[in-house]
Image (cartoon, rainbow, N blue to C red; front, side, top):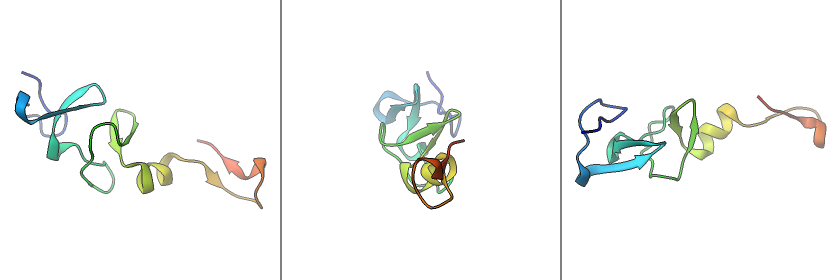
Length: 77
């Protein structure tokens, strides 16, 4: 029986949602930063952890702006 990556309890077929190659309990699939409940496939991943696309993933791992615009005004990390 697979274990939920968040709570480490067994995930039964009737309650599982599969995302990031793992089986989760539906309420356990949450954004690491804001703790918003996510649905499978509608979120981003960084180092194996789920994040909501906006604002958390974009703010933490997206391009950083500087300058006056144009191609040189973004910094990628």
